[in-house]
Length: 355
Image 1 (cartoon, one colour):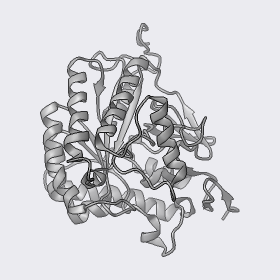
Image 2 (cartoon, rainbow, N blue to C red; image 1 turned 120 degrees about the horizontal axis):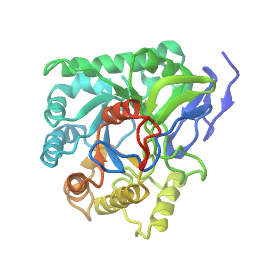
Image 3 (cartoon, helix red, strand yellow; image 1 turned 135 degrees about the vertical axis):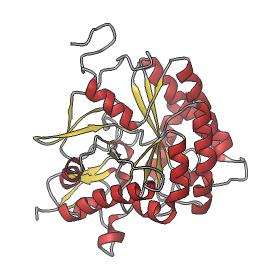
């Protein structure tokens, strides 16, 4: 075992050379960006911007606050609204949640034409392998193989009731990884991962941008398309962290709102306004942007608002559907983006012809 070293926020990792703590736009050790997708590339529907709507389906298996049973019930109207607006989404499902709650709500995702991917087998590795809280970088090849493979198998088993299905991608809980994690992802034959952050509001200058790229760790290049996710402005508008215990995170939220002329408030309506600005910026800058929502937080109610589904998520889905019909954006799943990345020459930017 190599000597422990500090990464961020006093967390240490001991297994392997590289750890990953991408939450909040932090740059994990050793990540190398190979051949990012150019901005302004022409997507299949003729748009020059792409939006990916993704959900981390984790209930209260991690550290989330909300009503697990309400989250499971919510997938029926969520998937119905996606289908009505012809908006495909990617649902990253924790394996344990798929085992214990998955048959019904996973069926709704399939019927809506969405992608189902893995969010690991357990949300916190220490709950599976050790009793004390530990950063995922402490875990070696065995634990990482289990987290990746068991997560995939649990999701595929839950889906087998409806039709054979092959999971094509993974998002790791908290974006925590080391090289053993990506060794396991590559060995599983997955096409994509979405673990590194695109924002730099916590530590300026960090982050990887929003364009998909070929993933590398140090000198090793992995056959995995990395799809950066928006790690700051996902659903914090609905459930803003406490300033006492998460001061850095709250400051990032305030910085974003101030930079975009938004009045800081804890409400689903602000969540919609933030996501709308994110989408508008992606269109204007002709790039890819990945939105991240945790549906467990859509169960949180407040005195000053009604349903977060009605006031936040459904308006977002409606907006994406309209923009897709106007061909201003290509709304796609992570698997579709990975396939597009692999099949389209990287040099196929707007105004250039494929080689």
